[in-house]
Image (cartoon, rainbow, N blue to C red; front, top):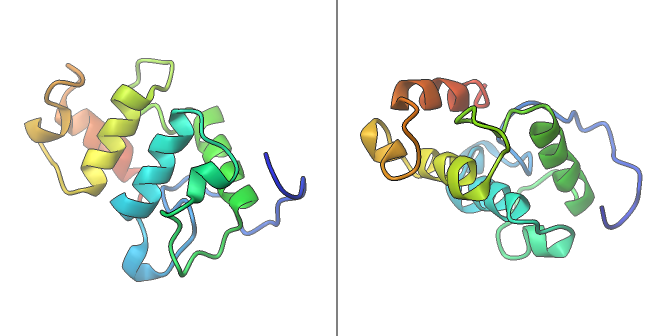
Length: 127
């Protein structure tokens, strides 16, 4: 991680509010979804958050990276359950869900896992 090696206890949670932003941008595809995708593609530090971090974010770049690491390391980002966690499947499923896709539109061309299963795994990350 870049920046300070210390991460505040802003409460690294098992949810997809990656930047811990205001209610209006909580679980937002263009912020949280893009950071999940970038992280799964290997982005770290400023490249992870540049241009997509919400103005109301309560987390630093280092805290955002730590939040994503917690979700990855606990298997929470593996929403299709087919380890390993991959951007072209799990990242895209999360991004599509946050964009409003549901049912077969969510999973089409990505996985044979049922949309209901994927949706329930993602919903568990949206308390």
